[in-house]
Length: 65
Image 1 (cartoon, one colour):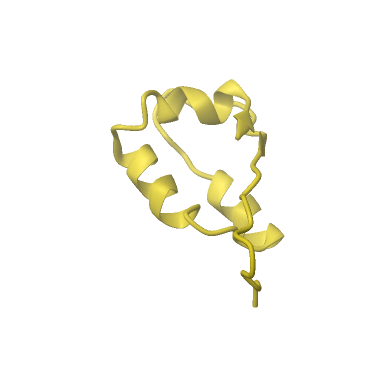
Image 2: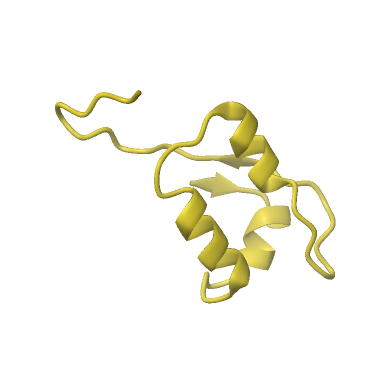
């Protein structure tokens, strides 16, 4: 994952509500619309741009629906 500070700063060390939320919702790759929707969040003091590139490893023999 590569992200701008608009995502990385509220994530911090990932031991917070933002980290818990994204650990749950990005455990599997979402579709593009849902991915964009997930990044559109409000958090006090963090209202700048959010850009993220994420890559999920594909297990051998795993077929995505």
